[in-house]
Length: 433
Length: 118
Image (cartoon, rainbow over all chains, first blue to last red; front, top):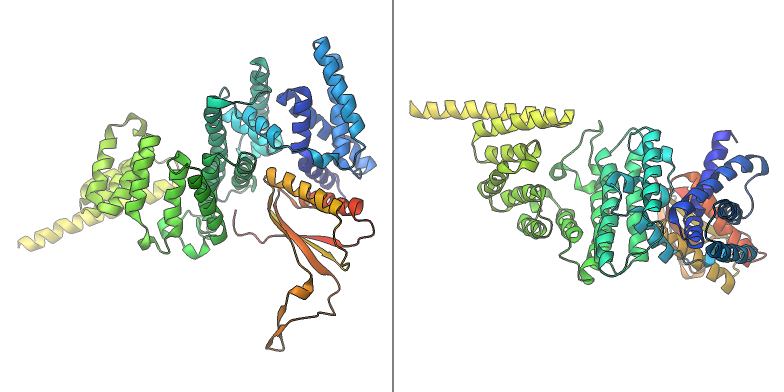
């Protein structure tokens, strides 16, 4: 076994144990960020010792014992309040006695403690970037290096984000708390936002050179499954899981052999993963049963579900999709939602109705440099036979597109519209003579 | 990466209540950690059947299947980062059998799913 193999094997064992290690330490220390530090220290100790001693028969117990010794050291070093110290030290002794119990590792119900961990890592006081990094590290057990690779950023940047985020949590006294009552729903939406951000980061990567980028989708799905199993009564958690499953079900159809993206309406639907679609539909159903049909994730999932259920692109139920977009616009008023509604209405009622909505967005400052607005307008104008205006819209869109492939596609459409425009002029000229 | 764990054994030894409880706890933890996607125990082979093609002939066999040496007793599907993680997870699962069903012998085979979905 090479050193790299041994390293991977140890990391794998640690990762299996990581959720239990961190939750148990957090409960003991009443500090999630400190628990995370110690969990990492246990990993470092294993990486140092196991290559010579071999992996112990009960690696979980070994890691836990190591982390607990560090916890004790930490408590002794840091001059904590005498009483609290004694209490915790007492706990530690008790726990240490428990350790001989073979089964103890499975006796923890990590659910509640894990929920606390998730809420802490995704605290709204932290920036989005900090929340996602912390969630991937503390909840998913990714290393700083893996997170950096997934986000195409230098490792130092991620490390700094994590250190700062942890400091913010400790300094604001937020390192160990569970939201209750009204605050719960605000906090939950912050958690769901993080999960969806992670998913989208992986989803846009489609097929990255590095498997870790698309892997982010799996991490997000895993987080979603976690949330629905430890907080089973939250409709939006089920809805988000459904939304992610339904979007992920198209993965195999989203790019061609050369890696070029294929638009949903042009995808080979035989490649959509029907079992994953069924899982997504079930999660959406569950959200509805819990009274969450009108939630923002439930509506987004409902829209994707309409596509998933259509056997062919032509069979898409556009009026229903337009209705869901109207519902979504009511709960999450955003110009991007409105732009999507313009597309759906354009399909359901005709390009004119869609264009009316899209044109109203021209005054929207948030969409000033957003290439999809002129791109959608170009498409609707083209369908209306207004080729010259369509060409101008596609040209604007091409100039605004950040991505080379999209830029090229829009350039082609602009040229097409220009061609159609001169053809229609000469056609009308011919009629005149 | 998705893995299927397939547990095979030549023993017809029924799992002890202690093993069942421990496996239940482990499954519970893995589900809450978002890693286990599905699992199931299988009834004895006598209650199943085999459909085969041999020499271009399709036949249905209702058992008993005398030639069966190792019988699949259960399976689980996991979403994990690597084969190393799958091995660590299977070792933990088999350790439970060692602890709670002395004398039992068997195999937990782990197989990676062919890539397709995410």
